[in-house]
Every structure is written in C-alpha cells, then in structure tokens.
Image (cartoon, rainbow, N blue to C red):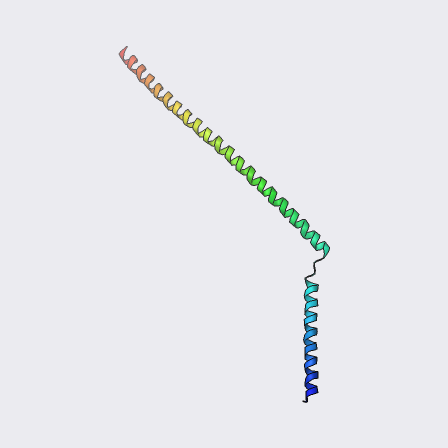
Length: 109
C-alpha cells in the first residue's frame, strides 16, 4: 500500500466517523425533541401538582386545627368525667352513711 492509498483510506475512515457522529447527533436530537404540546402538557401537570400541594397543605392545617380542638374537648370531657365520678363517690359515701344511721336508729328504737 503506497502513500496515496493510505491517505485515501484514512480520508474514508475519517469521513465514515464524521457520518457516524452526524447520524448519532441527528438521532439523539430527534429522539429528545420536545414539542410545544409536550411543553404545555408539562406546564399543566406542574400547575396541577402545585394545586395538589396547596390542597394538601390546607388539609394538613385543617387536620391540625381539628386535632387541637378535639384534644381540648377530650381534656374537658375527662375533667367533667372526673368531677362526676368524684360527685358519685361522695353521694355513695353519703348514702352509705345515711343507711348506717337509719339502721342504727332502727335498732335503737
């Protein structure tokens, strides 16, 4: 193989590499092309996601408010229950004392 054949073979190889690079670039740019409809769809999805996040945050805030209110109501109900149980205990004690007094008065008389 003389010098001119080597230059031609090298030129053909370089041209082939250029064509392969060009076709690869064209294929990648063709596959990754984003159309305007895709962009508008992505924008709509982003807006829907933003709205959903706002709704979630509002629901979390409402849940916290409801939990706080219910916690206060539960505390109040427990306090009322304790007071009622204490009153019932005192009424039972007074009732037992009155029964004992009546038994003594009945045995004495």
